[in-house]
Amino acid sequence: MLHNTPYPKPSRVYRPKRRTRAKHGLAMFIVGFLLAILLSVGAYVGMSYLRTVAANNLAHSLDACSVSSRYARLASDKTSLTLVAYGDGANGLSQTDFRCILSELDTPSSVRERMLITRAVDGAQHEEWNVYRVTWTYHPEDGLSVVLSAR
Image (cartoon, rainbow, N blue to C red; front, side, top):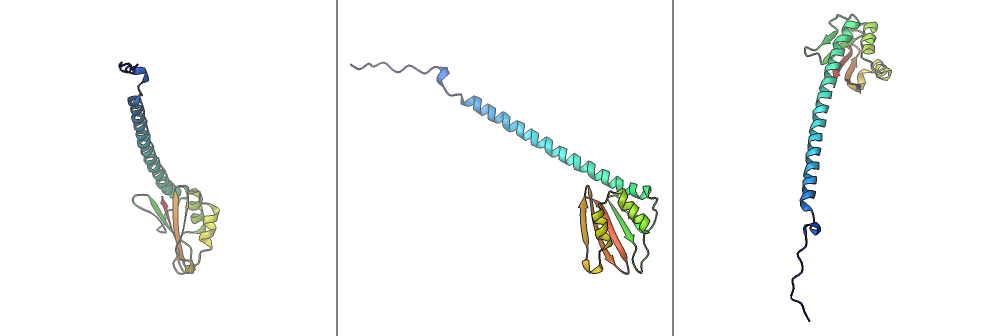
């Protein structure tokens, strides 16, 4: 014999909790989004700070070495320093002043050596370390031209 009684309605305990999962997912998205914003702002502030420190160090290197010469020019925004060093037929910074400035900026010895052995046929050379970028060329008549900048 068949019973015509309907199945009992499931109680709330047996129903899936879809709304809770959705709320959890939304909360995780918001947390991730806010974290990404904080990391982006932190990276921007950090890079700005490093550029400022590098620019201040360029100016400080001239003061620390007591260099006041037309062969050492600091850009008006203090983000680059142009040096003209010795050459066969050119005037420029003395080796002492040139080495002092590079030392004040913690230039690796490998970069210094590369500068000293650069030939005219080598063209423009460049290197980066810490917060600096340096580009240099050599010509026997013009000497060694070096541009140090904050990267």
